[in-house]
Every structure is written in structure tokens, then in C-alpha cells.
Length: 143
Image (cartoon, rainbow, N blue to C red; front, side, top):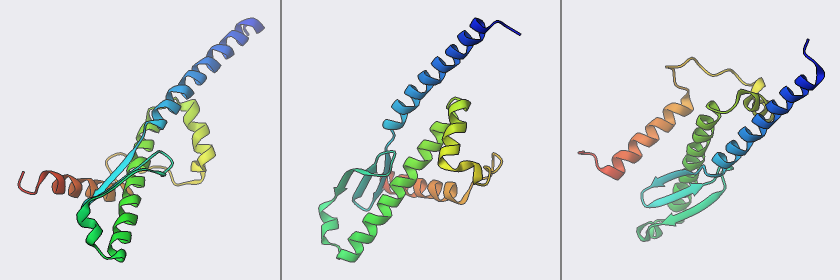
């Protein structure tokens, strides 16, 4: 067994690493933005799902209130899903000591473990479809 001062130095070093990782994670998470655009509506959300930007094209103002509210809610849902996907991608590269604590706080330890690589979840399939159609609508269907 090593002496007590070596052990304390090792613990201090590990604690410093965890603190540095926490600062990096916090900084990266604060920059995450989810975004969705649907027929002239654009919604951007932060990591918590709060709307940070909302743009409505003049043509969308001609829609009925039901059409507009439905499109806004759908756009907001997609933006939140985009942000959640980015958070999950961020967490894949985080220090495992932090990830374990984050999963515990989120209650992930009670959730089903991720499917093996190569298989997509329903949410991932939906996000990929949404991204494909958004890209097609933005870049055109003939490109």
C-alpha cells in the first residue's frame, strides 16, 4: 500500500481532472442549440428546450390559427429533439466518471440500455427522416 500523502495527491489529481471535465461539459452544453424549420417557421431552443429564437415568415401569418399553432408546436418538438440528440452525442465523449453521475441524476440507470450500434431507435429514425426532408426542402428535391 502506498503512503497516505501519495494517495491524497492521487485523489486530488483525479478531482482536478473531474472539475476540468465538468467545466468543459458545462461550456459545451451551454452552446447546444436545437433547430427546426417547417414551411417558413424556424424555432431554435437551448439545451433545456427553452425557445431562444422564433421566426415566422410573413406567408405563415396568413395561415389559420389552428394551422399556425400546430406547425409551431411541431417545429418546437423537432427542435427539442434536435437538441436532445446533440446532448446525447456530447455525453458519448464525456469523462466516464461524469457520465455515470449524469445517468444516475437523469434516472438512466432504470432505462433500457442502448441498442447495439448499427440499429437505430425510433427517435433516431424519426430524427434522421426529419433531417432528410428538411435538407430536401432547403436544398431542393432535384439536387
